[in-house]
Amino acid sequence: MLDKMKLWKSQPISSNFQERVMRIKKQEVPSHVAIIMDGNGRWAKKRALPRVAGHHEGMKVVRKITKLANELGVKTLTVYAFSTENWKRPKMEVDFLMKLPEEFLGTFLPELVKENVQVKMMGYREKLPAHTLRAVESAINETKNNTGLILNFALNYGSRAEILEAVKHVLNDSNNGIISEKDLNEETFSSYLMTSELADPDLLIRTSGEIRLSNFMLWQLAYSEFWFTDVLWPDFGEEHFVEAIEVYQNRQRRFGGV
Ligand code: V0D
Image 1 (tube, helix red, strand yellow):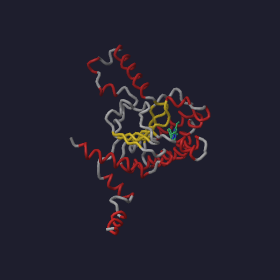
Image 2 (cartoon, helix red, strand yellow):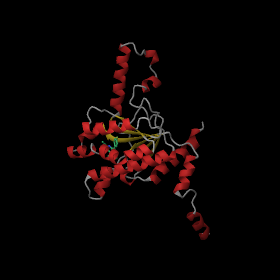
Image 3 (cartoon, protein in one colour):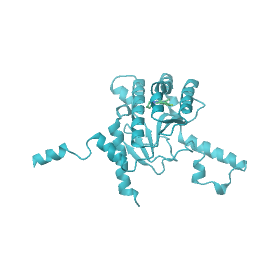
Image 4 (spheres, protein in one colour):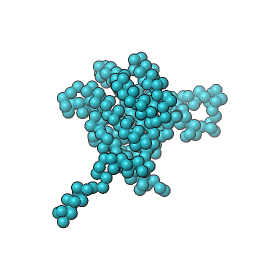
């Protein structure tokens, strides 16, 4: 009996990472995955490092997960890099964060281009430092004809502000006879959001044990599956992403088909 247990334990189904990846690819892969990358500061604190060390480590994880998402056949990966609330952080932390897009793109853009990744951004561009915006816009432009994974950075993004802006835009269009009340529905309203060119996320991942939306894609996440983990973002690895997708696929199997 003990031997049987051992045998079974040593050969769990899909223990091997590559096997799990292959199995995932044979099933319905979520087209759009959104991630709230929380826990960078906590990761640093645990190691007696400055918070920015956690942000820097977290940046490398974005690159790693982008590559895996692309390999799995995910079409869009949206990552919450900076919220409209994050301006309240100490100036030195904000200044550091605003240099990360340049460092990320300086290091990884050539690889992303090779992998056919398309960089996009959603958020309020006005408040961003010129150097940050320049780097992001240049990456968007350099990758605009790529046809692979869309890597969508939510940068100075807030969902309530996004919805309010959309409402104001609708009112304005209505006043100018561009849209009438009878033509306003969920589909036409969606076209006024920052995600007008993107499908709604199928799966939301939030790390670091917080079970909240924190003003992230409130409209777009209406029908999405949520997966939360206590793992801090800098500790988030391929195995965690694969686990999230497996959980998504199991839920689809159980509840998806009517
Ligand atoms: C810190 C964890 C990549 C979350 C990830 C400006 C917080 C690392 C970018 C990035 C941040 C953004 C745009 C772009 C290319 C890269 C990034 C910020 C923070 C805030 F075009 N990581 N990353 N941006 N962190």
